[in-house]
Image (cartoon, rainbow, N blue to C red):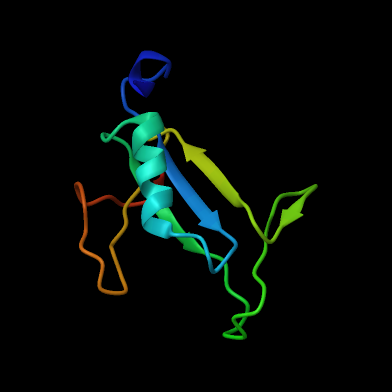
Length: 101
């Protein structure tokens, strides 16, 4: 899928943050998998509000949203990425580190 449109020998890695407590993070991950394929790595989490559980925001330089996601796409040929699964989730895929090359 994505490999056909990506100008790198390695697929990108995605860092994702969502902003609403009603967001189903698992469905969000399934959506990425459906669109970009199952061979990419997706890391991330949900925005917080210091445990108030009232309203969370994600933002860019020009916009913010309490019902949105932000995504950073990293080229693994230029940036090494590593992550672990927390909060009882099981790790999926190979172990990765995030280091500047």
